[in-house]
Length: 439
View (cartoon, helix red, strand yellow):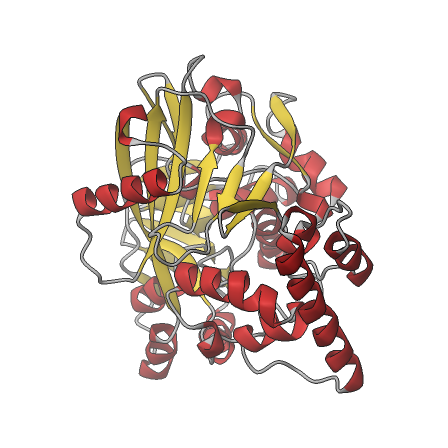
C-alpha cells in the first residue's frame, strides 16, 4: 500500500494544477496521482508523426483575461512560446467572416450585413423594453444577437457541436456575467456599417509552445510537479474509493488523508458506491465524445488559425491550421490541419467512414483536396465536452453536495462538469487545492 498525504484522481491538466497548488501551500507534502491512461497528457497530448505535430485532444491555445494568471501559465514554458494575433473566422455562406461574427459583419455582403445588424438592434431594443431571463440557450442567442445572427450561425453551430437542439439546452452557462463576452453594441453597429472592429479581446492575442505542441505546456507542469516530489501512477483507472479508519483508500493501492478528484463525476460516484439518488443525478449529466482528425498536407497553410463551420451538411464543426501555431508543427512547404467532430456517447464509430466524410467536407469547402493528404489519423476521446441540457445544474449540485459531505474536493472540466477554458481550469484547480488544505 502506498501512503500519501493527498491522493489526486486524474493526472490531466486539472490534476497537475491541483498538485502544484498543494505543493505550493504545503511543501514537502506527499502527493500521489492516479490516471487511467498509460500516456500522460490527457486532452493536452501531442503526437509527432512524420515531422508533423498533432494536438490529438483538439486545438488548444493559451490565453486569459487575467494577466497575472496568464503570466504564471506561460512561466511554465520558461519563455519558449510563440505569440500570435488571432486569425479566426466563421465560414458563412462561402464567406470567411472574422471571428467573433458580430464584430466581423463588415466582411459580409451589404444586404446580409444589414439584415444581421437590424436583427441585433431589434433584439437590443426588445431587451431594454422588457428585460427577462432567457429560458434556453437558443432563446439567449436570439435575445442577445438577434434572429439573423442566431439562426444563421449560433443555433446551427451549437446544434452541431452539442448534438442537442439549443432550445432544449439551459441558458445559465452563458447567461452569467463573465462566462462569455457580450458584444459592445457600438462595435456591432460600426461593423454592420462596414467598419472593421474586434471582439473577444482577451483571446485576440494568444500563445502557444514554440515546439512540442500543446503537450509541451503539460510536460512542463508535470516536470515541475515531479521535481517537488509528486508521484504518478499511470494505467490505473479509479474503480473503488473507500474510507478506512479516517483515511481514503483508492483501488486498494493508495491510502491518503485527503482526496482530490478531477475524474468525471459519474465515474467518481460509481467508485464511491454513492447512494442511488446520487448515481441517478450523475447519470443525468450529459456529455459528448470528440473525434480529432489530423492531416499532414503537402501544401502550405493559408493565413488562418482556425475556422468555425456552422454548415450542418458538413460533419465537422471546426478546423484548425496548427502548423500556423508554431513553425515546428510541420516541415517547410507542408502544413498540419486538424478537424474536430463531436459524437454522442454510445454511437458506434467507423473511423474509415468518418475520415471519408471529413475529407469530403474539406474538399467541398475548398480547404484541402484528396491530392494534398500525405497522411491522416483519427483520435477518439470518450470525454470531449460537457453538455448543458436543462436540469444539468440541479443534477451537478446533487452530486457535488454529496462529495462535500464526504470531504472530497472535485474540480476541473469533468470534476466540476463545466466547459472551462484552460486558464479557468488552472485557476479553479489551484483554488480547490487551497480548500482541500484549509483547516
